[in-house]
Length: 561
Image (cartoon, helix red, strand yellow):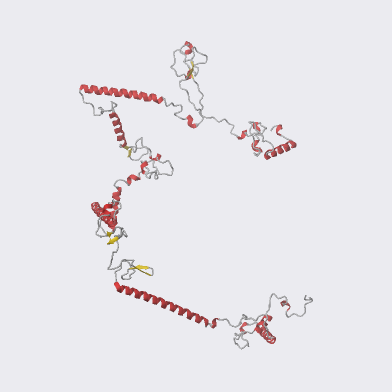
């Protein structure tokens, strides 16, 4: 650490004040060596550079990535480019061709008997040397880096030229064969309109591809060991792989060993936009639905007692199923016809107005003003059938109403589609209603009598009332007058009872059973107000400060205040 880094106390104080002023915004922020402001709130240990950088000024350069970031070049070698053509040999050039771009060990020309160094002739031009920077892992291993797609145009042109020559040669051979009288080969004659392009060859290629697709190869002595098996080419090159139809990891599972994807990779896409529905789709297509229906019918028939089984009696099961379908179709057609006949079919065209307003059997005569003179107009009241009498009724349902219930007016029956009972049913309904009303009135009267009886019995329950002041409930008021003589007698009686109890030693067994008697004779008379007053006077209270002095003579040297 250099001596310049040591500061005196005054310098430390001034530096601290300057730092506080910068934090308060009174002084501009410090600048680093690149002219950028340094946030004054950044701690000192971050702004101070390490000692080995020999930088005494505040800076943040050591906190940044100061290493130079190399990037890949956006260009490639300029193939075949020449920069200079020399006329004589130069010192340091290739001894074989005379180019300054490389040494003799790296020369790609044919080794000369006498190199350009000694002959001074046929000096090769200097190649363009470029510095291409490849830093990334992928850029160093890119096989197509520097590839020019325009070069492939020459390949296509060469192929087309060779194909044209081949077609022309083949056409000449066919013409020569015709002039010689030899029949052409089965696949050599081109169809009219093909222009000698040899369309039969393309058909052959397509046939070969189809044959390869359906080819069944046997594996013998497989690399993994085990017995031989069979492998089928499951798809052609133009097909999209199953695992590429949906790249979501949570989509349908793909088994690479069997190349199968049982579930639909795109279940939410419309069927018109999909070309693959999953391998399980094949299992439920074709005649599978009919076979499943046959099995279901056989099982249901067996449950109902028919001796039939698909595996045991397949022909019988098939015949029974065909008969069932024919009968079902007949019943469905019949039911449909009945429904159409009853309710009509809105899909059929409406009849013409001339037919609707045509002649009828109803005769109606009108006057000049349009009023009906004779007959009556037929008014269509409803689309349903009216005045249809069922079960011997002479009135329709809903012609009678009573107490919120609809019924028939002919018999007063309130049950729809019931059989008509005539006047007898009407009388029975009236009698039933009268009996119901009488029962309800009688029930109400009995309820009133029971309530009155209970009320009367409650008033006479004198034994439920409390006695007159047995436990002091009916104590006299504060302003009531008490007989002083009776109070003294009650006090003496209590003192006498307490003395007897003390003489007996507090034995409860010697206590009289009827201790509540007024005269001690075992009676059950109520206590008087004077006796209750005497009991209150003789009652000992723990919170009484003078209770401790009872029965003691004097104050033991202490006067009571």
